[in-house]
Image 1 (cartoon, chains in turn red, cyan):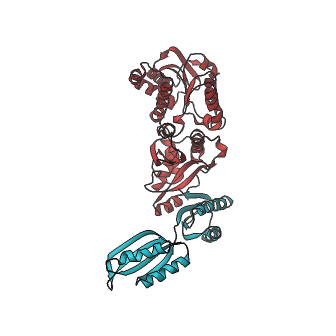
Image 2 (cartoon, chains in turn red, cyan):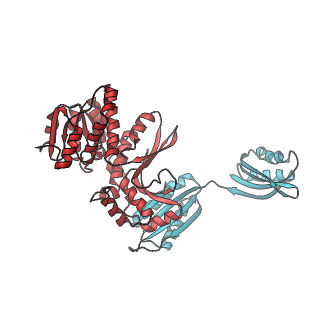
Image 3 (spheres, rainbow over the protein chains, first blue to last red):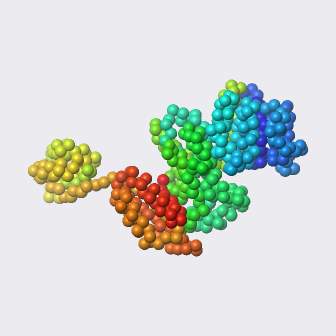
Length: 332
Length: 163
């Protein structure tokens, strides 16, 4: 299978490394390798219809800060410049308009290519349209990596829990907020915990997307649309971030053996992101950058999962599972 | 109604069953029985039974049957199932404000128990109130959520509720 990687930051490089490390697996399972025939970052690109060396691409990016020598102004023309089967769209997300990622996904689906993406913005804004376009053109659109990184919540519900009626999903969907709240549990003030999260690379320089709850809300929208057959957007979600949480509130919660966690909740009538009181020991009382979710279904009852919600290899792991699913569906 | 009764019955064969049978006679439904053979008073053993009967008339009938069968009723109380919920309200608030707020809430939902704790004021003059409530009906949780959410929005407070 020939893939084009759009976006070659942390996640894109992780995907290239994972494709290289799983070469034998693909040969054994499908008798063929995954060929990376094109890669673009924000300004440059490189293509080769015979396939590029994944680890070589990562080295060049690390040494020069760019993946290719050719520059571009029209990403769609770059996508059209080489034949590929699947677009791996891992460019930076844009919650407001969907950004270039949305354009890339739409273009690939219009050209009848399968798409695997970790880009939340396009799915939070245009989920219904993208799914319809994929169905119309008989393409796969896979997006496990958009929600909770390596924690396989979408595929778990789609595949393993296919016969269940899922009543609700509640979860910690943003590792940055969980890191900050966990640090506050041990006495750090909010500002200091945020600064530490920024220094460790967990939070952006502008952390508003995380701490005001928009990142979690995007994931709530994706879960609602993909698992509950709803047609909602970001504006339908009731969003409260964690900026109003004080050390005193954390202490009072602690006095009752509880912690405060930012919980995204999806149900038939609920779409919410809000700080909630969680009893210590509950599956959603996890600490650090971990993500966790509790699925409530009619037959199985409550099912809890947790895992790393972000990170280069962890997100690439979600992309890998989607690539395998695409290849299985194509009966390659 | 759900009722809990502490009974003392003679420690003789058949008396234990004989004291539970009248509950069925008044169309009641036994929820749980704790039989404590170690607690013997005047040759009587203690029996704690929780059951459901239709109304107080049926309960009176039951009490009469027990008395006729020489069953001593040590205590008898109605018990309710309660639904707990915890809330944190953070903002420029006073204890009096929160107490008034919860009095208003109690007019809208059936509150079985309530406990309030407060933090001292922080650097920004904000305080936190932690409210632990038990309500008698499940639907009351939603009503209380909606009431407190609106109050927090109007009062510019941060609203945090339990799971």
